[in-house]
Image (tube, rainbow, N blue to C red):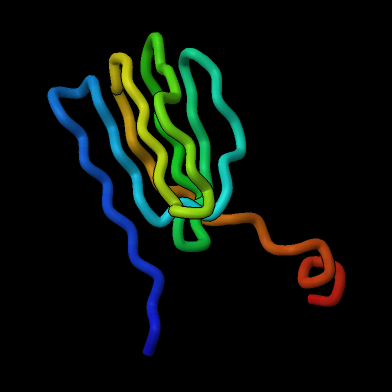
Length: 84
């Protein structure tokens, strides 16, 4: 079985490296959102800055004051919701 994997490395709540990134959704100085292994990963903080974004490699590097890292379920696709 070939399961998707990711790794999150947070150093001193200032530098964050995320692997397994499939898509970057949103980036502001207080919030970063991406899709990792089919789930949404939200990062909250202050003065967040994207240092590196490489979707082909699946790597994102952030720096700033990292206060929260949270996984969320993705929303069901429209067709699945319509034909429930």
